Image 1 (spheres, one colour):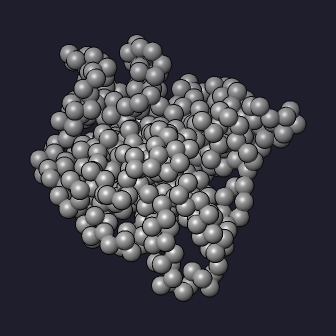
Image 2 (tube, helix red, strand yellow):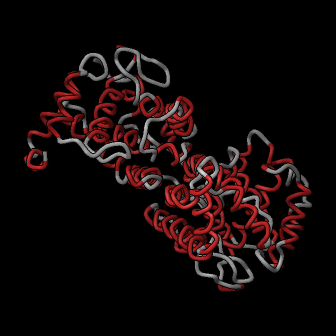
Image 3 (cartoon, helix red, strand yellow):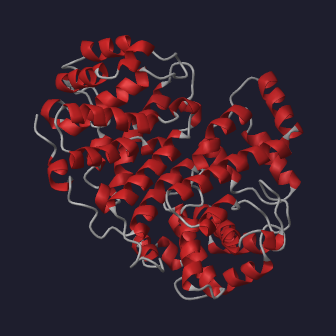
Length: 464
């Protein structure tokens, strides 16, 4: 089996002049999916927030911290998805999308809770859930936002972002009047870039997602001195009057325009090691979405590397493949935990949603120049040699060696880990299943390489 044309060209060629703004801007689209927001929400929020920062007279360094806080504000968004489903008996993605549109006031919050909780469940179960949510609302809110905000800040640290960016993400949901989450900070206790990020998020939701600039302006004004600092509201009102502010939000080239706003773009070129760190960090975002996928992507990367080494791929080639393995499931951020964590059989609509995740993985990775060649490999990791896979129904030689390696690594980990519908299988049973489907689902050389690699690791067999 020949190598993929992608790997031959890309492996070992380096990152070139990959700018951090291109990489993070593209990856922010994956965060939008988890939040249930229209595509480009984080990029539009970045445009809004940077214009507010300019109106406030921020210097170059502070604008740079604001820039990456805005793009990565939802970095911890996957960490509370499973908990939302469990607490509210609902779809986490629609819950998050609708939660961003709640008007201020207790009545609006209660209406939202009643409309979202336990829909589709029996009356008694819904009533018990509503009672629990209403009775423990404050603690639940703090728990959910604490998980999201602290996880996001921790991942930003692993991606080498400054303490200011970490603090901006950690304090995104704090409110000027002290009634935010998770720590109920007040006024100047809240970092200024966090205040701008929250306002920018609301402005985009109520303009792009909810219909008009007038909606956004009205909503921002109404939250002045409660959610938002009056000074930052004034800066937003000044910025939004400048020519091109609103029209740019609908510009099809907004991604490129936002990249140009990065004050540090000429000095923030990503090298190979930094690229590995960012890929690993986004793998953590994906794996945090479900308790059943903790460290899945990193294990798949390890197994893929073991197979590739056994098959004689070079170190550079294996490093390149490892990034595909780390990011192969990034499209799962588009799938509700109500589906991912379902203990029973999926219905046809749910199964269709799951099957789209590999397509979404490919779309996201194609946005990034340095990941463009791994995108088809990640997108095809559920294809089968007999053509019965998804999303494209590829067969035989249409599936390159790197994808075959990734498929075996992915299935090996899936079978050997706990899932909502079954417990983990013993190693011997997992290998037996892989070997039974050689030639139909799996490449025999890849399966044999997996067995050989495991054979040099006695601890696996002791646990089998």
